[in-house]
Image (cartoon, rainbow, N blue to C red; front, side, top):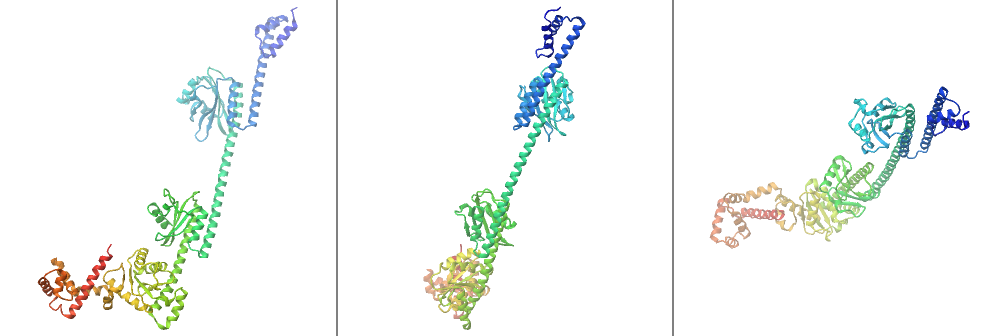
Length: 639
């Protein structure tokens, strides 16, 4: 009987089901102690060995299932997809017992696989590896959507090799590689790899285990992608809501501005409410400038000085706004962000200037500014219509006043009172000669300058101001200069003597003087009538007739001097101014009397022997004085 059969039986059972695997020698010794040897012992030893292998497989499967359950729990508690993927790759690395484990994610648009997570790698090149489509073992896995493996990568089909992939594999010293796809429906999300630095044949169990882990990785990637999509959708929805909110706020602001602008027009408050409304709604300084460049309304003080500089880029933007009718934004202009011209057809009334603000002007804000510019144009047209009607009334009252029809005087006084003017106080007059197309504008400008107690209008081709004898806010020359600048045309101002109760006579005198000066070619000075009374009383003519008179009287002398370079005209002027006395003329010119007599004889040959007779000399005297007056006036009015 063999010794200690119980201990031998315990050894055999332990050999089959213990984690500590016993070798063949221990199994054979235990069987011999039980009295089993020979063929029977060999068969029993083989069965013990099979039991050992099955037990080891079941224990390994138990560990794998535990790892898979652990991975599933992590998926259920997924918060950070990147961290879960990293743990999953590390767990696969441990379970598969491989040298290197890594996960590559597929970029769907480019079909490029890029390494996302690794375990066991040593080279940075491998961690940054990118596999182009159609190359490497990874591309075959993506194309077939099935697991692929290679025992020796260096002997893998050459058409799939890529230098960058080969260099990265060589840097890690990898020999055998197994990869399984990460799938979701019909899409490939990526590939999970294990690799060894020695030659290894992968078993079906290893492939199945890696595939199970790849499925978990697919869930992580898909969930992460879903979360990214949800986050993107949330961001887009939030941005859309913000844009919608901003748009609604802009629309509300635009509607409020529109209502206030309409109210401003109906209330007749002028341009100031337009500027105030825009400045308040858009949170920036606003200035309204008329067609002459004068500021007529502002809001949002203080206005930056550069905002009112209408040259360079600002001028170009204004011209563009005039052509297009749109609000034109400005970049690089200090203190100014946009301009919008006030136009109606081809008429230009000025421009809205918008300063910098806390927010950028939106398209809705630009439309609001354009609407305000249209309201400004309507206001300008309204004011022009009112001014035109008032101008027409003033013209009629002025005409009746200066025509002095007795039957109309009571009616004239009544109509003047409605204009705020007292006819009996009007005792002074100013006459302005202005080109016809500018007379209405000149009358409007003068109406703004001379005050409410004066009467301004057009009469018989001139602009006339009648006013009380008190000093006007501006003298005649200042008024003339400001009107000339306003209409951009030459303006002649004539001031007759104060004429209480005789304004028609004062107008006639001023008109004759203005016509005389126009005939002399003078159209841009201010003067009184006193100097010209002798001439205007005799000559009330047009430029062509006056020029013919001067040429007939002294033209021959002027031509003589021009041809010979002499100054007979100067001698003739001195002779006329010295009472036709040769002696006094000689003293005035500091010449000898004989020299003057010789020149007078020469004038006899030029003008004819009868030029010193009374009638002829009178005409020549007037011509000489008018010619000299014209030269002095032209010299005085020259720049």
